[in-house]
Length: 286
Image (tube, rainbow, N blue to C red):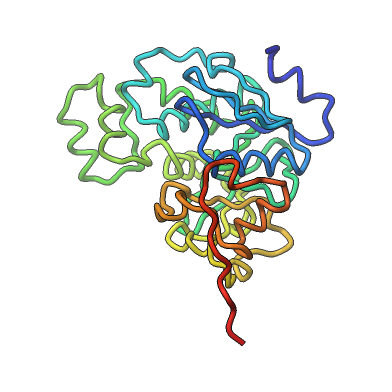
């Protein structure tokens, strides 16, 4: 594969990229990536291990080292989500792609005015599930530099954790912070840095990219509706927070009429082809 940047200059829509740590995509990730292809975005799927081709036209596979020459130890020291928090910054800087989490559905084509794209979530943090920053962004530069420093103590963490980190080995502080707080390098870090460097005013309202709070994510699978009040014509993407979804949703096909089932129908995603037992339609009471 040639450099991703070479692919994006001639396309009508900006290219997007994501990362997978493992050997095969789950069905939710396949569906989400298909929605970006459906809306016209070139999609790059970066991977850290040998993985099966998902067989989706419009998705190009590339090894993660094509945009970030990370040390092998980094994969052992950080969990997959934290590694992705680091990787996305290098991908944005080195490949010029818009980052998307693999559990984000595309509702409408994305754009990044002045190379900025990110939005609030229900918690009040600025989420990094959809992220673009200019190469010259001070937030981007500072986060890349800080996350490369094993002695760095994230100042956005709680005082209790900060005190524990300062008592431990200096060269393990960042790694230990990630073990204590799963989101240490995620939305809290992005929010802190954007505020510090005067770039947080670029953040979009939560309904644009992260419309439904993670605690209510099961409504995406409700055949009687429930998501309509969270979205409007400005909604560009839907962050599913897949790790927070009930397990049953990942084992069977979504009920006909649900938001997820409708999204799959729109892009031609076949649940049975992915080994998901069908779910019976739920009769609506009148």
